Image (cartoon, rainbow, N blue to C red):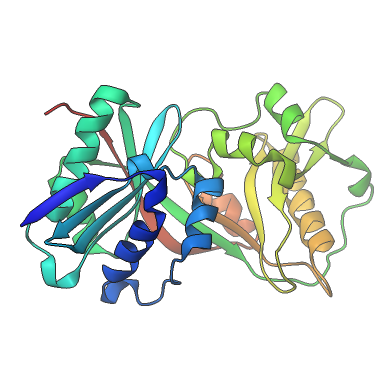
Length: 292
């Protein structure tokens, strides 16, 4: 007998078990999830047990949906069905049940970030009426040797906190963004972020928020970055990124990572000019909650 149910805060063990049990060949490269990892997802991504579901065949979990929730939207963080129980509408039922619940309780907007190379997963969301909204790209810049900055360039740099960037209306407020780095995420995690801006006499020409690498040799994650139109903005962003790499590197400029960036965030040609290369891509799907 097939059964589906939403979870509670005391179901973390069940959700972890279901997530691992439903692992498929496409998940081979992903790290295992344990209780501590699940709690980190709650803390870092606003995962809510009440937005998570498990599908059962008898007493065995055969499908799982992990959902994160913020005031404006809900993220389907993961949707897994056991390989032996696929093509039985479990995934569709999980998505539909969440949509029906949100039609009553809100928020009505649902999003999912699906690896672009997982054709079956992308097709499943499309078949359920979800719309592909944007393509999110990981941009990587390898470690480089320290560069000579233009004369006086470092004098134009100054620390800038999240609050000042928000007050200056420089942070992304609308448009597609990945869940990890959208405006609510920036606000929630602002204490762990460092900011740097490049100033001209008239305005802030370029800026970035970043998080220190967790270990030597790891990439420095850029949480947000921007440049004003024109040559000063392009030069300023180059200076800002070089300085961040210098500050976070051990023997040279640290590698930089801008994860799951939407096309509207920074121009692709500018990123390539600054030494970044395209990496893994995700498709941002969205839907509106619908009542039964």
